[in-house]
Length: 547
Image (cartoon, rainbow, N blue to C red; front, side, top):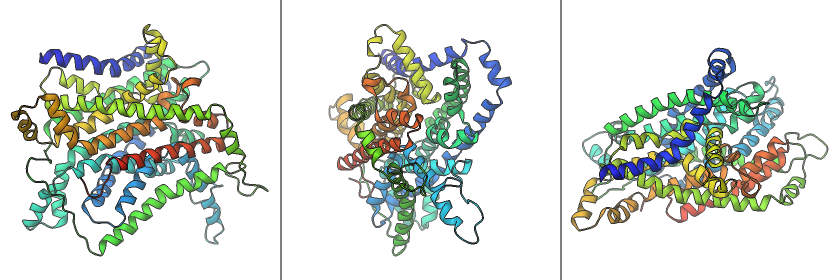
């Protein structure tokens, strides 16, 4: 029975995660010269891989910074922390394309507004900032996504940790730093490592920021180089898939390391005894922390939003000194576009549908891996990582090929359902990994008590595990919904006029040189994600006083 159940779970995960990857691997060998060109002749490919590793290396630093910020917001009584936490969610939710455009208005060289202001000073010679550089790309990623998402991912794990562990350390005479180093960090290290590894992999797949800021300066990364190969005339699919297969090997090694690491480490931090949620009083120091957090919010959220709005009303994007620099014409252009209103409906269906489908599937898979003894679990765990081993654009290629060349799937081509499946599959590694972290923190004794009282597996899972996993369930639901709203590369090749979401509509405007209408679409996309964030808070998302 265990082998049968394990086999069914393995087949289900393989059907959605392994099939697109096999399409990519097989495609890399269709042209015999693809691998030779990649390894021996393509200096740009090697440079792109180097830049990808450089940018992805921000993940451990972002994980540590995000962990510290989340711990302070949960464990310390900081004034206004609910607003601060909400704004950090918004920082991550904002679509990267319009946010990057906003930073270009401010920091571009030499026309950026901040550079113009500083150039007026007598001791400044030339522009001080250049957002179209390695430093600029790192800055946009760290402020717009990397650090905020770590706060989102690590916050629920910290909230589920019993504060009595830290209180015991303080009772024994340890200071706050010693308690943090010897108790808090070891207990939450699996969650931090998970966040860092996931952030590293996501860093290898980053596309929008590098496409806008890096390509014009010849700074190519793995994803933008693959995108360039696909858009070559004629398309060089075999070389693009060969490069992805090469990266796949490295990511599989990371996945094996992570699987081995998490199988040997993990601590139950939600137990059957009374759970302490006591916070740390900090005295007047809490006001200093509050001020620093509000500065962080201003820089990461307020500034990009302000310049995003500014860009929507500019006659010519980035030019402040022309005779009539501002206009409302771009808003009228977007509102009159017949594809605009249907794209809003498609976006809502895509985001909420992928989140609802994904959260349930991720929870079941994670619980089976951590708590059951059915067969093939190590292989199932490994396959759950595969969708992040190819960039979104090639995952879209794999999904498209499956739909077109599988007879019973062909009628689904161009439907919104295919996009929903693609987003749910793309977020499978994130959902399963973070759900596993949540399940590990629940002591098995709680489930044992339920079964002693006569409850079966399903009732125990529904009545005990799911309520305790609620913070992580909400976090993952929101993250998947936002991925559906803002994702471009995964759905780009799958979307048709009848299923066009806002993200693809925004990219089409940008590709046609209509940057200002693209910013207008970005404003509407931002409104949608903010609405999702507000709804999430209404249904239990909070980082202040846990329930």
